[in-house]
Picture 1: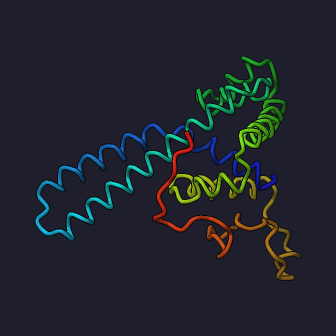
Picture 2: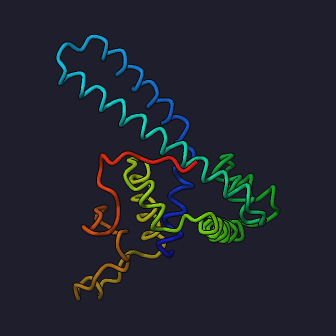
Length: 201
C-alpha cells in the first residue's frame, strides 16, 4: 500500500480512540490544575503550567483529527466510503458490513481498499496530503502508535521484505518519513516534540 494510504488509514484507526483519549487528557489536565494550587516554588508552578499547556495542545490535536476525519466522510459520497465510515466511525464488524452491503468477504476487503483511496482523495481535496498530516499529527503518541501498527499490518499482508533485498542491504521500500524502525529521519519535516499543536478549525 502506498504511504499516503497508510497515513490515511492511520487517521481512521485513531478515530475509535479519540473520545476516550480526549476525556483522559481532560481529567489529567484538571488534576494538574488542582495540583497547581499547592505548588510552592515558581519552578514547580512553571512545570505544572507547561504540563497543562501540553495536555491542552494534545486535546486540540485530537479534536482536529476527529473533525478532519468526519469532514472527509461528509464530503465523500461513494459506496466504498460509506462502507468505510460504517467500519471505522460506527464500528460495524465485517459480518454486518457484508450483510448490509450484500457482498462477500473478498468484495468487502476491496470496498475497504477503495474506500481508503477515496478517503485519501478527500483529504487531499481539503489540503491534507501525506506531508501535512504528518506535520499536523505526527507528534501525537496515538498517531505514532497507530502508524506503526498500520505499517506492520501492511508488511504482513505483503509478505514482509524480500529476503534478497535484505541480504543485498537495499534501502527499505518505504520512503521517508515512514520507516520500519518507527523513527523520523532528521530533516524529514516532522515537527520536534514539544512544539504546540495549532488548530486548523
